[in-house]
Amino acid sequence: MSDVLVFVEYAEGKPAKAGLQALGAGSRLAAELGGKAVALVINGDGAGLGPKGASRVLAVNGDAVKAYSPDGYARIAVDQAKAINAGAVLASATPMGKDFMARAAAKAGCGLAADCTELKLEGGKPVAIRPVYAGKALIAVQAAGTLWATLRQNAFAEATAGADVAPEAVKAPFAAGDLLAVVREIVEGVRGRLDVAEAEVVVSGGRGLKDPAGEGKQNWQNLEKLAETIGAAVGASRAVVDAGWRPHGDQVGQTGKTVSPKLYIACGISGAIQHLAGMSGSKVIVAINKDENAPIFKVADYGIVGTVEEVVPALTEAFHRALHG
Image (cartoon, rainbow, N blue to C red; front, side, top):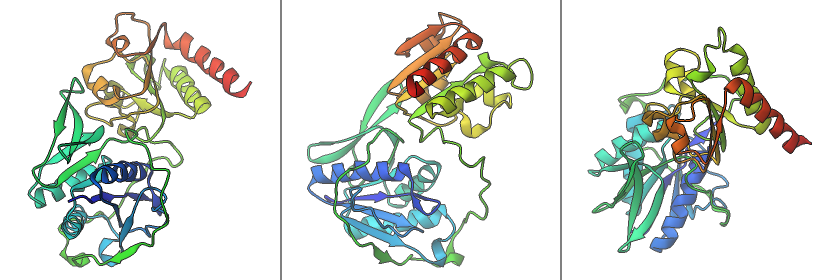
């Protein structure tokens, strides 16, 4: 059980960044186990994954998998894990990965280590490290048999070395009519916007920015300008989303998206434990708040005490000078 099966998610016909990060993690774990990283691609060509860490690429295509099906993807993952006698099965903790991997692990008679931030070996067996209690503690998960795990986005690096491998065609073990559930339509958000879960820089706004339909209109425009200046995604706290000021897809926190960017700038966010659970894995945290006692400052690497009306435009100008001269 030295090989590692890695589901590589595709988006718009190419490997998603999160999928390549999972493959990089899987290739390093497989090397420590003395085995191979086997990439599993569903509804994608699987080309170019060798240099990204895959020693083998299994590509499942055809009418049966043209539409996403949680039970269909779960069945394929279980079948291929058994076929290679995988020591671990990995996928990124994207909405898709979270959806079907739990089903697959249950179908395989195993538990799932969700949203893991580290993989290692102990006693020759893979171990997954995952945050619990809203990020206040870490636990190590080791399985008696195959380890099934989803990996937090941006917590693992892509592989940078490997040889080209030809994808191996694998037939789906079912017909489209056999599936219990199939996604018929995907309603997309605004195209071209960075996803907070994948972005390396995130600028988030909280209730302190005020209502964008009223007195907070300029504040949110300033936040968007800051994000554009530094190439960041725009996030939001739960209070902002609940108020209808930003879409749910922007929400960072325990009931939103978990992010691990290189830089996280929290603007007008007090720092409730639910929000901290979603962004505490950020490499560098900058907090802007007029309340010097706000909880966000306890986790921040850099803190600025001041109003968003004053600080955000000044910060944007400083970034513009530094980046563009």
